[in-house]
Image (cartoon, rainbow, N blue to C red):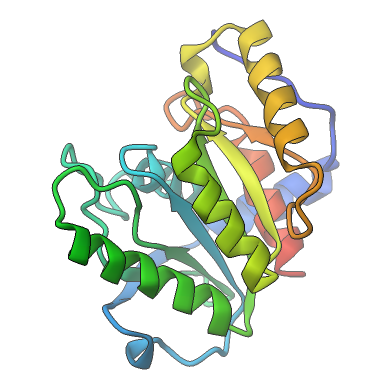
Amino acid sequence: MTEIFDPPVFDGDELERARVLFAHEVTFMMGAVAIAGLPPADLPEVAFAGRSNVGKSTLINAIAGQGHLARASNSPGRTREVNFFVADEQLRLVDLPGYGFARASKGDVRKFQNLGRDYLRGRPNLKRAYLLIDARHGLKSVDTEALDAFDTAAVSYQIVLTKADKLKVSEVEAVTARTLAAIAKRPAAFPRVLATSAEKGTNIPELRAEIVAACAI
């Protein structure tokens, strides 16, 4: 499939404003391995979370319009710190440690996941979190812990389906509907699921507009 259509939410002006913002320079700011090392909470932030190999780095690169901003790797679970990227000095994209690591010890996994949870609980300028789910697989039991963490932290979060170009349109519609039903009663879940393809650019403009709207820029 080459295109996925969601009901229109943003008008042309909103999409263009988001395009222009991310057309400006997006730069890597820093990586933090402990809460004490986080930068000042002086810009609005949106955070990205997801299980290993969901395509998190690739999606961040697509949002920024840069091929190698966030380091993608063939080794699942490479992101083991909280990484910050600054967009046009107006907002930050935050890459949270992945979960479901295939090659990390149980102690390491706990350490990385706790860092992500601590960030969610203690970041006053966090405007929204995006939980990435592989469209081919949908929500799995391993994702439930992440959903619970968002709800407990009372952080507004939105589900973003990745790799939707690998499915037929009808299949994307089905997994979107199942995902919406699964989060319907979760208190912090944003009631819209966005199906994306970083490879095809599908719904990347809409995701940018979601980010800009969440940050009230």
